Image (cartoon, rainbow, N blue to C red):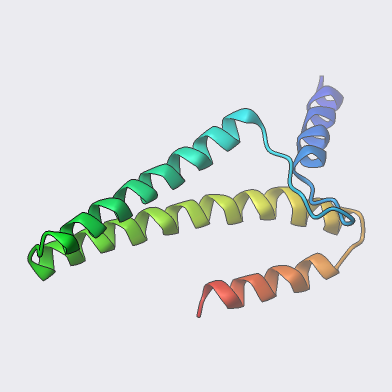
Length: 113
């Protein structure tokens, strides 16, 4: 039974793995649905902020909505980064590709500007 679990875990990691030549990450339909849902929520918040500006709403009210949109986008980023580390980076490291660590460090530096 244990070997079956390892096989499924390996298959899941292969599915997530960034393909070196194409630089794509393959996601399940559920993962895509979750990510798209988060992005649509952010998009709706941004449209709401735009309307608030057009309607000359009070600045602190707009700032609260900007904070909510920023938080939602940060949440999306955390999910995406976690999936990347657990899938692409872990798979590359297991294959002996330590460049994945350098790439991850570069990405984290950009995210933390």
